[in-house]
Image (cartoon, rainbow, N blue to C red; front, side, top):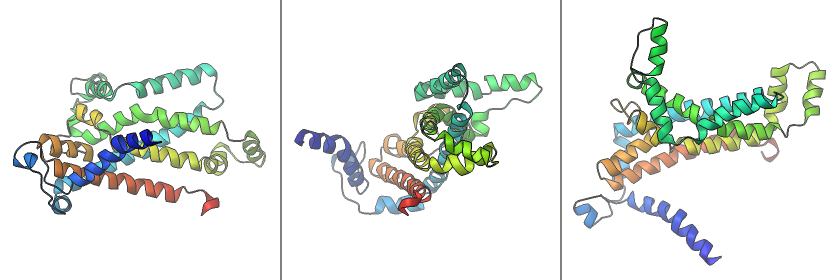
Length: 279
């Protein structure tokens, strides 16, 4: 018990507590503040509330989370799981192989793949030129949409597998009874299947949210947070402040803001999708 408690404190609680402590200091990578860190109270958080870069990064983080995590990965994963129900084994294997193949790729590789696809001289523009459309630099003109699409492509496999496992547990006689009563496929899904998946939907949304808000490498490789901060989410801003500018204290305060964003979304999921019997 004691070794387990030590490991828990050293590798999990320790970094979190250090981050909270550092956010109340002027800790820095170099200079006098690095040699003699001082407690500065709420100064970092006062700066946080008035920093336009933080507001911009918070909005972009919410857009990235809703677009790629909530709408993209969760809805697309559920749709794929529903569409694969009852299909032949080789069809499920082929679709699953393609989706899971994207999931297992390292973020840095996925970032390079999508950057090559969306660059001005990339594959997408070659296809558009073939039908007479003008090429453009998608990473510059629509940077947040580009990283949203890349993250949907990379992360949908997780929710698809979670929903596929949950759908296998839905009693077939309930769906059959609904069909006998005259319900179509969409009504069966809406009134029978989805209510039985509430716990899975809540758990999947929660996990996808926690994964999505901390995506860094994919965005950094594709856009570097640019142009002009138009794809700088909170993880990139935290990296920029803490390691780019060497302001560890303010960077950790941005990290706590990221924790608040994830906590708010998680609370909404748990409140909205709480099972009826415990309300």
